[in-house]
Length: 189
Image: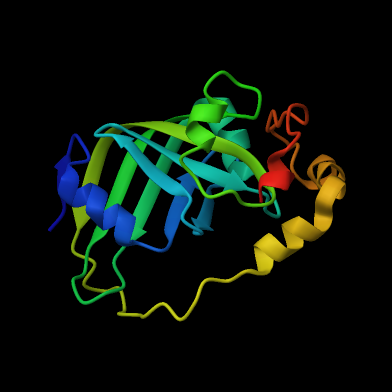
């Protein structure tokens, strides 16, 4: 029931745009696999083989540590509507941080959210669809605002939070989070 593809065509791009949530999976060479749910309109298709997502502050920074170590990344989108489908994007990612050459161009594609850490850009090697027949049908009640409120309340204290919680993975791998060049990000939110 599954099929592989080599690019994100218009049908897949439109499917991605309709989803209010996606999952990001990464793993170090040795250590724990990480799967993180994402939302808040933070995913963009840049080309048929390239995507990006805006990463906001969370409890950890596992994705960054794993991408720094080996680059492997998988995105998964699921339809919770009447037409079932699961779409996985397999690729290799890089991290763009404030102050990097492509930051301004990429950051302009996303909503201005408090607590922005970095942008992940991934080159997609293949896509896989599967039926999604076992995924329940849900309706979105509303977007949560709790993370944005928490990040906004941190203000300048966000750097302290990053130092305490986001500079290495739970397996001790560095995330390479650059704490410089972030002036004005919170003001945009």
